[in-house]
Image 1 (cartoon, rainbow, N blue to C red):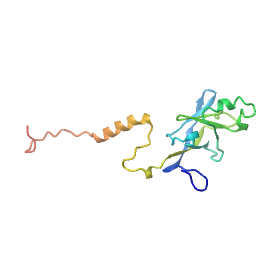
Image 2 (image 1 turned 90 degrees about the vertical axis):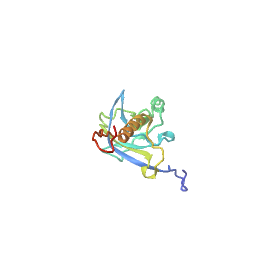
Image 3 (image 1 turned 180 degrees about the vertical axis):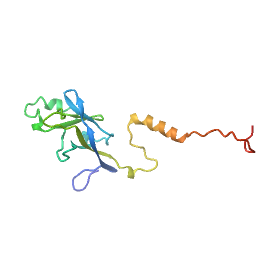
Length: 161
């Protein structure tokens, strides 16, 4: 949606903040797993911001998917001028460095994601869940709707044998 001031917005969305997301090793770098799937937008803008949990104002630099491999071949931009960058790969955030080690020593991050605002959803709207969750949701709904009822073995006028 184009806002008159020249900015852009996404209808029925909110920015959800997830804190203390663990950072783990990934090859020669580090990664984090997103807690939920963000809204799919161009240039991975559904991942709004990533920063260390201890320093939320020190934002990491978003890099379009597949671009860091090209950037690290350019000497001047190889280390992003000492900053930390990240790429989004599915539900993974892949950092440009192993940020768990010194001088960064980041073991947890804060992630802000652009997600669907649940208060704007109606009774019959399609739920924004990922495909890998559909089977679990269906199984849980069936379990809830087919609650076990013990057999009525009492003998009375309503029971006919």
